[in-house]
Image (cartoon, rainbow, N blue to C red; front, side, top):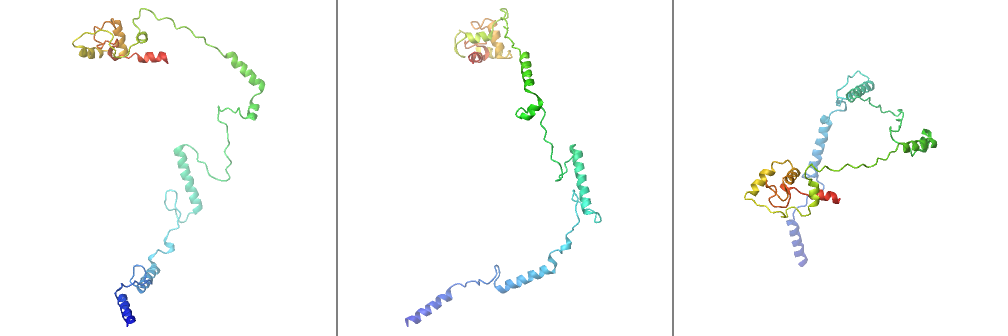
Length: 243
């Protein structure tokens, strides 16, 4: 009795399970029969001329520009003539004769560039000159060798005014260090107006020294009293001496 009830339950479970698709059916088809019918229809369509016949593709040769050549012309001769015309056109544009690639071409000659020494090639050097000639050449070069002796450039005249290089080397304090007393209510505006008249800070410093600087500053070129007019900096001159 228990075996009968178990068998009935198993049959019920199998009836409720989803159907397994037929593994023999083609992909995308409901069954194998549909697949066979579609395959037969496709092969029939191909056999009826769906693809072009072999002679539908032209075998006529093309020239270098892609144009078809005449059917009556000799193919090899026509292609060679067309290639020659293309090479001649390229030579006319570049000004150089094109090199024809062929196994029978001789190898290019290897020539030494003009001016390149062959002193490491003993055979070449021995053919050019002898040891005696080298000795004579060395003696000739030594005879032409000249030693230029240094000459004094002379002293600087004393009537040309102040020298900003000497001033830069004689002054030791840094830029912005107040050293000289300055007075003035409109020092900032006067400084900007008068400094704008000089093409460079060197010219301003030179004129500042000519007019009694650094002790005197009638034009207001040095309002902070460091002795350097219009932002002039003595450090490049000092660094040049140290270097």
